[in-house]
Image (tube, rainbow, N blue to C red; front, side):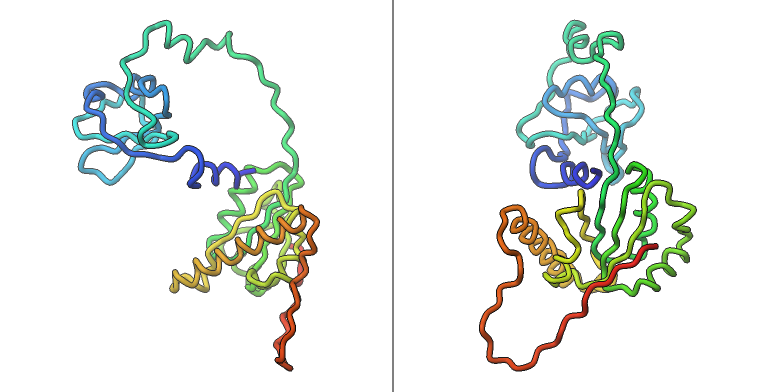
Length: 256
């Protein structure tokens, strides 16, 4: 799903984004330069003395001395500028419309997506997700935020669930994201994508926020791994002399 695309683009595995300067591009336009990186994908220009990056500019935009390119490549030493392609090479790279094979688009299946954590701008993310997934998809919101407060927050943000969401069925689940028992009750292996959000309640403590997100991620990976390998994923019990302990609240769920 969408989470896999974002992970592929923004993760540290596979191809990554790089900035670099190439004086040989000075005076050429963006369209010409696009065919001079056979081992990378030219995505944009960062003009000299400017912090703004222009993504996919007009093809006639001219490279000026000192401009940088933004490319997607395997590594920073796996690409370089080649001479302008010959007409034959250009045809081989681009082909023609009639030569392009017809690809039958597969029907997109409904997805089950899990959002862990709560943010005040979550309503915008939900609307965006609704545009990408197919009808019949389900989104579960799991956090310690009170469910009534969540609904009120989304309404205050202008999101009318019944009217605005065309493809997603929204469901709420209450629980602690760093509790193994609470995460196990979500049946994580049944989700196509899981997105861990930086909880707004911890936004003033970046270290604690990152630690909590990392703990959640490690717990999720371990639970899914144990499920797939057939290992009993119940919490291992060890002898203890403590006579009292605080019982964790059970996660509850509710549909919107």
